[in-house]
Image 1 (tube, rainbow, N blue to C red):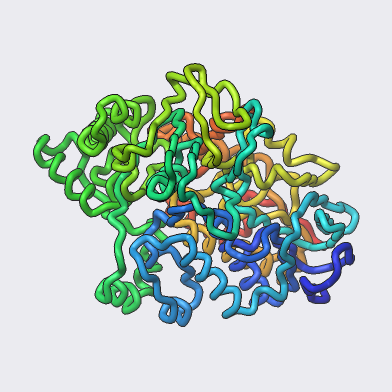
Image 2 (cartoon, helix red, strand yellow; image 1 turned 90 degrees about the horizontal axis):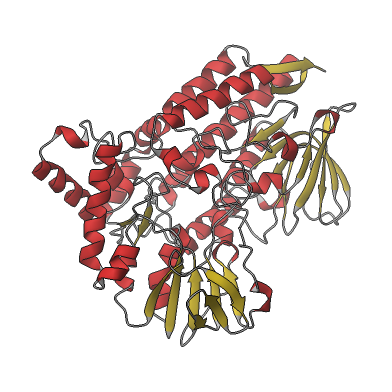
Length: 541
């Protein structure tokens, strides 16, 4: 089929082998692999550039919580050797630079149509093709559709009364302006204390005249202990990247995984281990003992250690108590990694507003009115998160066989097989969505595994003369049951987190990621393919 160019005018009818939605890390790698497979491809991207979450999340303090030497593609040894990271945890601008470097190095932009949002995708059963429509009037036919829409890409703007009446500047951390925002001298209200709000707080506080942090639910935050990468660390990785990557494909992210339980050691030894990991920084803290995610009593020891650190770091006892989580196990909501978050509340220009004591009544022209008082501000920062994992998919009108709507099929929660395909939606693939390890592992490792599997699947179809592949409903049901059963073995479901969609009013409460580990997941996917794509329905041309 003819290769499509992103330079073609809007509304031009195009036919390609593959349409890819999204030009983040998943979409870029999918385009690269489709080209290697000899398939004509076209990528649609709503932004003006590549990078996905790292394109949109430009808020102050934005930074990856996976160490930078791990958070990169593994498909090119030359790329691994040539690119140099500057810090242990890379900041957003550097990750975006990396994404742009990859796009340039592999000449990806010529097949990406920027500033174009997909609005609908409909399966034409008679033709065996997907018809993809955009907000620019494009109507593209493709044999395959790959949804590389990202897990954290549908920014959630809360339904706050009066929000449109606010007279000042309003920003969402997930859709930040491309130009930096100067907070010098401003009175700022930051709503939300998930990862983005926690990262932004100390940075905004250093410039703002006054910062009010509106918190509904406190989060557990571990220190990053970020710093410049030294030559020995860089050389350790680059000297043996293939071996490191092979291990990462089995475990997802390199952490120091413990072999003993939290209650299997004396109290003093347990405290020393928590302290050692706290001082080292990063998510490695939650792996201090093997049962922190599995046993409530074990988890309580880690949670109380963090609460004790909060009491040490935050001078005001009432503020420290309000910042200390007590309603969910440590790690059952995304563990947050930041620098100087708790210390920021010791600044005279920072005030914590506990929304459990004084909920927001309304946004007014000059600030925020709670049940107790009115806070005068000239700038709003909405750190209110995302409709995670399913939001970007369901924002499009996706229809499979007989006009079946994905929105209707997923009304009770996402259902798919292996997190890769949905029964009734032939030749439609999802990358690192619900039902896969996705957000619980190094995302780049998960992306590469998914895209490689999809590429091999399409090659198999072409070599065997098949036209379509889709999940079998029985296999889909078994996989959904398995994902739920694995989650129920852990403490994850005990939190009202975005992992279960609890942050979106009306969204079905279903634990979405697969907690069984990327090694087990990869083995299952490989076995399915080796057994002739067991659990999928393949139809001849």
